[in-house]
Length: 230
Image 1 (tube, rainbow, N blue to C red):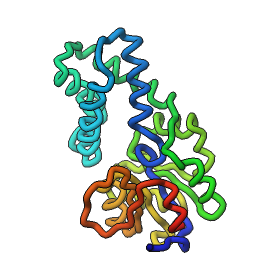
Image 2: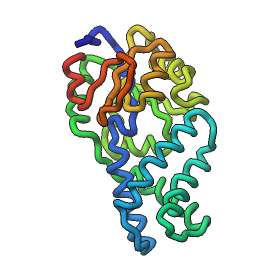
Image 3: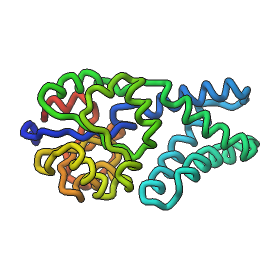
Image 4: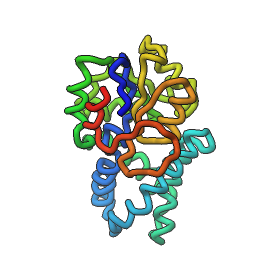
């Protein structure tokens, strides 16, 4: 197996890599639906919401939609598919409530704390995220992992989103790191892996769902597998 022990800087994605977005999202929606008195099946809602959210995030990453459209349509599509009538006013309110509640839940992927404890003494750790700055800061703080990271780069700071190479260049500059000394670890093949490689940075694909890819990039299915290469 490939070895990256010579690296000095490790750049992690946050959502779906360290921070369990889907689990925390489910708790947030459960809270909102109970507050609103919605008679709606949470599993049915999430079954549609999760792929729609991913669909709109991919469009957002390449600037095909605004973050306002992302927040609106990922909810609108689900209610339409479930034939559950909700006004635009309520959807906008739900969107605001969701952003408020989401960072209040702080479930991490299995092994996240253990691997960060393992890596911290020997590497400088960093975050590169496309998420909204205020929300991502709360997630890191509330899940008590903010202290592990030397720098946190978000797309608002960099002015572009992964996979654009400029966000990786921005993160390297902020971290005072070279490309050869750096490694990107993330779950999004397009944003994290292809983006990093196009920027000249080696990468490890956190492929929890065993997605089929042709790229020979090193893959892991559990965070603790990083111990084998770092």
